[in-house]
Amino acid sequence: MKRIADQGRDGFYKGKTADLIVAEMKRGNGLITHKDLEEYQAVWRKPIVGEYKGYKVISMPPPSSGGVALLALLQSVEKYPLAQWGFQADSTVRAMVEAERRVYADRATHLGDPDFYRVPVEHLTSAEYNRSRMANVSLAKATPSDEVKASVFPGYESEQTTHYSIVDKYGNAVSLTTTINGSYGSCVWVHGAGFLLNNEMDDFSIKPGTPNMYGLLGGKANSIEPGKRMLSAMTPTIIEKDGKLKMVVGTPGGSTIITSVFQTILNVLEFGMTAQQSVSAPRFHHQWKPDRIDVEAKAIREDIRKSLEKDGYTIRQRGPIGRVENIVVLPNGKYQAGADHRGDDTAMGF
Ligand code: DON
Image (cartoon, rainbow, N blue to C red; front, side):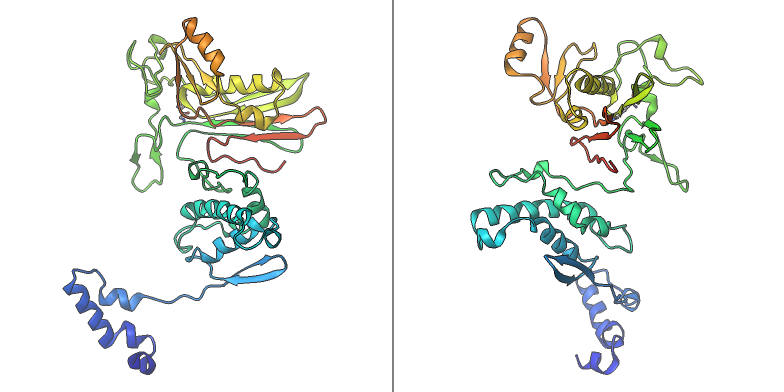
């Protein structure tokens, strides 16, 4: 303390204290050197400022997650009558815990040193965002943490096959899927170029009877030949009625892309679902071989499952199928959007 009082930062990061720290490092096989100590700089950060019910809250910004998470928590519980429920009352505890679960899920993905990582502070501390984050909270039942994921904010890029659907205010529509076959493609990084090589070769049929990573079979039509393009299942789709835009839809999902788009279209045109319902509804899939229906949980009612199995269908339950993005134009010209809860998808701007 005396050395810091006399010499300021140099009383700690240089001279005797620094020597003692480095000696201690050597004794314990530590890593900190004189250079590390000399180079360390304390940084002045602008405090994070927000509001809770008219109170101004001033707290610590990144690299602490504290201020961001605190504001998010306060905004998340703002709508609940906590004072009326009372201190640590049943509902009070539930509301606070559900807020904490969601905020810490975002913390795990989005917070880090802002000198190294773009922390989406504005989104995480937006009252509107935190209100919407609590929209699916039930005070009657815990949300399993496995069902709570970090949100996705603009600027995010998927490392997988990706689909987006867009309509502008004039009705111009884009349905776009870009693909690789597996996460991170071939996992080969082109040194110095900033991108990975894909593994689209797997979408060719390497020989009759040998499936690709999605179990798809093929023959001569999709065999590997110089200059040939591999067969994709991408299904970016636009639907019109009497020359007017009706739907913009698509998804990743390998072999299940086609059947996911098929079901989503039927969900709207035949079963009267909203855009969100059409995307959220459980899906099933059959691709000839293997000869079975792959189903998401609750995709097929128990009595119907039994009847199908009796009549020769094999049914296998699997994890989520697809990540569909659907925009539906309503009869009054308004746009309705559905983003898939199976992934990290978002609908914006409508
Ligand atoms: O083009 C295709 O059909 C495949 N490359 C799609 C792969 C895919 O969607 C991976 N998704 N999760």
